[in-house]
Amino acid sequence: MAGKNKADLKVQNIVATSSLGKPVSLTKLARSQSNTEYNPEQFPGLVLRIAKPKSAVLVFSSGNLVCTGTKSVAQVKEVIEQVIKQLAKIGVKITDKPKITVQNIVASGNINVDLNLNILALELENTEYEPEQFPGLVYKLDDPTTTFLLFSNGKLVCTGTKSRQQLDDAIAQLDKNIKEVLKRLDGKKK
Image (cartoon, rainbow, N blue to C red; front, top):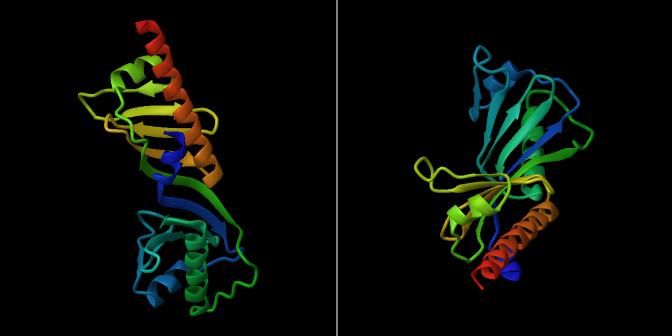
């Protein structure tokens, strides 16, 4: 299970933040770009949609950015470069390379084992399972801080990690914890 599951994990979304270090006129940006949504009465940020790689960037007048929808840090960098090019068109010149901070990685995958969620809910700590409301079990790890959605067919969603290493560590910890539960239950049967 451990060797295979890492290959089965696929990053679906990365949320990253950055700062351009310069103020941005959101009104000017909204007027000059058709791929924007800006409604300051409802929300102070402007949504800038990028077609390739498909993503959305929240741009704030402070120059702070929140990038969502990318599937790798390389894509985040690509998107921010595109934002900088679009800002150059309205006279905002960014000379320093913005520092990117990954805030959250959402990945999905399969651990290739059928799971008895009722047993896991009883045997693992930090779980929430309400099968009448939702078919998945919510399982929270403290180290690394991660939340898993586990389904009985072995499929899962993982959120909360900030790097591929943390993601791999979280999956390894999940794998270990599930194996410990199965071993304990197997010992009780004998």
